[in-house]
Length: 167
Ligand SMILES: [Zn+2]
Image (cartoon, rainbow, N blue to C red):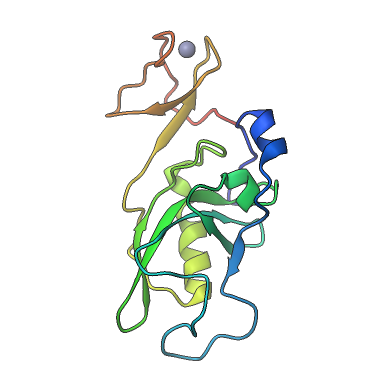
């Protein structure tokens, strides 16, 4: 079973995140058997979106300045991050990451993203274009973004554990 990530950010952000849930991809209605997604869809080439993958495996998109917890409608997620697209002979993922301080998903959530993109008929590479590693400090409880494999807390300098512990 894939891990379900629950919101771990500040409670005041969760309660004030009022932009509403993200738009599902694909949009409502059947997709064509081949060819590009019909415009106007939620996709805009070159624009960076906030995304989450819902527990049902649906990719939800929201404007980049949206909180992931708002994009998810407050629900837990299979994956979260930022994503952009390009369009030539069809829709492709351009950049996709697991960068979400609201959910702090592991890079290992990639298969959920890939499956949601496959379901939407959007081509993609075989991994995140950039991976982020989050850990909670066991000493001061701060959530850290681990940089350059240095597992030390930014705030208090304590060692961060090798395994994911944010949830
Ligand atoms: Zn600390």
